[in-house]
Image 1 (cartoon, rainbow, N blue to C red):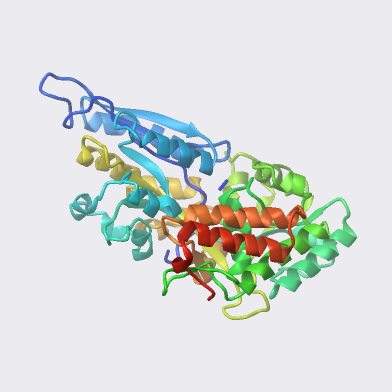
Image 2: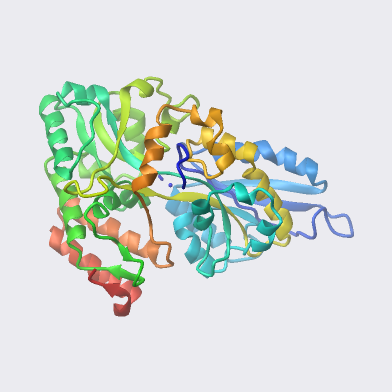
Length: 453
């Protein structure tokens, strides 16, 4: 499944990648051979916006560049499988992309692997780069301070809850929990009043991949005051009480049957049930999810449900005991990058620039429920009116956090997912799972790269 000024709503974006076969300079070689740009990107049942965008701009780009053929090659896979297939394509110049869709949390590791082209020179000549917010620009930056990717959008995460379900449980609306205990109290009230309703969903386990950490565990961890990574020391945090407390909350949620059964929670496609069945049927109280959530239910979405505008509401995920700043969110986002092995960097960048132009960025932000990263899109009336939750999810930017953008991150994330799975299935106690995580982290990064706070 699924992933910064005060802008507006965001959905997960898809992927774009360009592979070059037998390319020469733009427009073909001296013998008149044609040139092709292969665009490879992610496409799923719930995420078609990028495919639609590329299909829309392909004829426009080809008309402006005679002799150039744009080859669209969507990869139909979830985030983890997409990244695996993308990495495999990068091994050879024959299959490597010219332009591709890149998750921000994989950016620096892929820069280290030599997959992304430094596009500082192209950006220096692009008069639209100034329209992007500074936070958005930083999302595509490497450790060396150079830019390697251009953002498509960003997102935030909050609690999406069903007003009819909460009202039936006697919970006052609008609902805004101040502590973790407030969430459990509401979930228990729903359980007592509506036995056929799942009170509160939080992802856990390896099946939902990055969704487990971004839409569940990190909201907990960062609400304890602890962090995953110490940015000042550039070390990973182990022996964290906040880590244990977060696991304990998930354990309580699942042990008391306030969440889905673990067998359902470990299904990689559990989100389809959440959005396609449980919420529309009034069978789920709440879930922690991204600002892109309305895109599932909007006209043309995977699970059209017109009543969502009236039945659903958004709350901020609280800190553990109501500590300042009072709430927690997580943000990520996707970018477009030029492949390091491209035969024509300027032509590849021209395609990328067209895809994120003001007109196309506006279309994408609306159709993919993105929080805009261009200031000229964020101020567009059509964007601001795209759905009724723009203000709610944009306000979460004030309390948001970002994943550590290090080359080790993906391995660390996998260990967090494993710890949550071990706890909700009863395979390990909280202490055992936390200790196993600490050992795994030290094994991945080395003893000199961990700290106890």
